[in-house]
Amino acid sequence: MRGTVCGFVVSCLMAGSALAAPASHLQAETQALSLAEKAIALRSVEGPANQTPQVAALFRDALVQGGFAPSDITITPYRDTAYLIARWHGTDPSLKPLVISGHMDVVEAKASDWTHDPFKPQIVNGYLLGRGSTDMKLDDTLGIASLLELKREGYRPRRDIIIAFSGDEETEMNTGQAIAKLLDRADLVLNLDGANGVLDERTGKPIYFSWEGAEKSYADYRLTITNPGGHSSEPRAVNAIDELAAALLRIKQHRFKPELNDLTRAYFVSAAQWEAPATGAAMRAFAADPTDEKAIATLSADPALIGRIGTTCVVTMINGGHALNALPQRATANINCRIFPGHPRPEIAKELQAAAADPALTVEDVTAGSVETAASPMRADFVKAVEHGIHSVYPGMPVFPSMSSGASDSMWYRYNHVPSYGMSPLFIKPSESFMHGLNERTPLASIRPAIDAMMVMVTDLSH
Image (tube, rainbow, N blue to C red; front, side, top):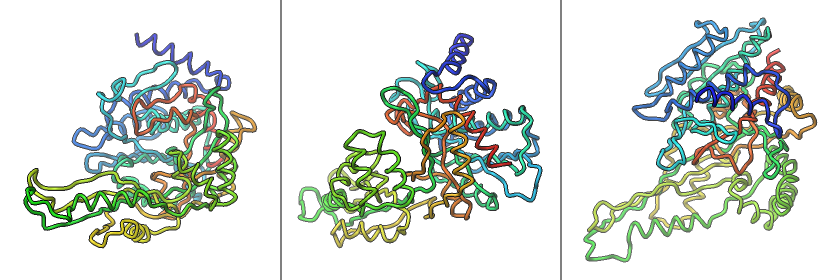
């Protein structure tokens, strides 16, 4: 049966009529998929049974078999996880290194919720299914396979190329912070955990590619209401849970100021033509005038776009009361915010306090593992390399910048003044992007163009 599956996979890699050019690096393509399947089968989720160290060992073995010296690869344990750093030495040690960044851990997934076991990779109807197929074990293996293919072809980089894979990006991000400190003299970071190519929803053909030069700051705020409480048979006018609920509803109605920066303006102008007419018109209108109320209303109604037009805050956890037959003495909630660049966390805390409109409510910043960072510069060499890589597969395809609504290890590199750019070489339909969600999957036909594009980008940035 395994042989049948392998034959099917190869046929998918070689077909890919909507995505791929003729086969050019079949060994790398096959290796990327095989490694991704093995990595997905390892449950690299935070906790006592965390198998992230095993993923690191899997990747180390592949690198050694591909020609990396064992002494140039380190796996560093950290609590229940680990991080991996591997170095390909360049010919000019005076040059700052190029870093290929990624993470090996994934978010939790329960088999009872999925149509299949998320940690038993499957290939169904031309898709790789499993937790990490999109975020981001396949991206990791694409990076590894691309470098090993360059080695097989005899390429010799001028500057060192460093693979740096963290082990807790989905949780506390401590290993990403540690790696960024170690590599604070790097020239540039190519973070494979980022924006990607987009396929047309109807035809499945690639329509544009975007990369990320900035990301919003992550923040958690604890909202607390306290009360003397009492016996539940003697209800009082002031109830901690009622107060908190009312404050949360007022915060829900609050709108942070819609705003733009150079990256988001470029994204809205460039991507508008591929959206539904109303959405595209709103994107162009907002790019021209971020106070346009009609455009704001349209973009705010789209979960994929609301995060691009300003700060967003949403309640993610609540807790209240201490006994079934007692009035609550305390009620708390966590508000998770993704803050538009340029706004410090204390400023957002004050805005939440004002929106809650309850002097009895306290707002405490409980953010862990996050710092505020400015956008990376739009370096001409990076922009040229990405365009060259994508155009080598899809001549003339639009390539433009964007800003991430989430957080990644790029944050730590930028904090250490190293430019970092989020860029996954995969192409996928927006409607099929299930990272962090149910039934995560990625089209197999994305693998070939991703390998080809990656090899060009890495060559351009390391020569």
